Image (cartoon, rainbow, N blue to C red; front, side, top):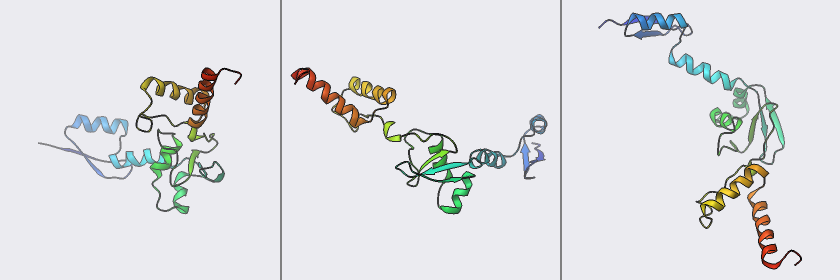
Length: 162
């Protein structure tokens, strides 16, 4: 079986192809090896500037590029900071700080949390769904919702004037 060879245009690594048509197609579109493609994807998010905040929301510092965080914190994994900046689910902080892309609004992550069946097994699915809707639409915390429910229950039970 004949293999066809060409070099990666970025790193000059030798690439192998099963047939000449695959090689010609790869040359035509200028495709690179897997490691060069991964480093280009990495550069896309490591090259952006990020803002660092305390957990309380106090601004600390702006890093011109995400990779500059390594100068202050050499043991960080940038993918965790990236997940916070992209506002991935359940990624509110990384390494004890909140992170956003530069000039993006810092959101209050305490208001994003959902009521789960694990933490609140006494609530039925319909009640959890309604409470999660209040969290999302009204922007209330779980404590504010519980206080509101207690007030409404008290009004229904004892009347509005009592």
